Length: 150
Image (cartoon, rainbow, N blue to C red):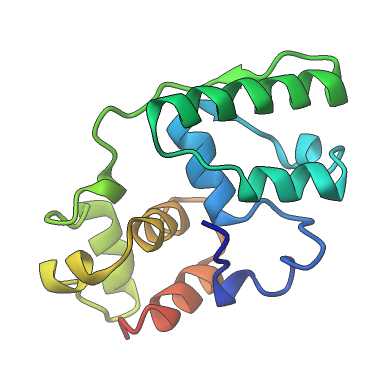
């Protein structure tokens, strides 16, 4: 999984920001990664976090151990662990999260169950993350447009 979204195009070459696919892997393995910690990593280390798989239980455990080691090496502080959602909303293709639906309606968009089911899990993850308070609305709108939901 090394696909980047168009709305990430301004930083994927340098990987100066954490791309959605890495954010998804972090949520999957239960590790918090601050942007300041990400920026202490080398480009090769960041690229490895993009490219390493994190789907099966073995891959998730391996990814978790790798990122914990990197954070400790770069910052001297152990990684912060996050609770792992047993049934993440982005893997549920049948139910549009109400908070996401509300955010989409602010743009005049109604997300149907058919729209939601047609998205990839990573696209659903991105929409959920971008719809949370504190994220720039411009990227949410860009994602909605990129995913042909407008």
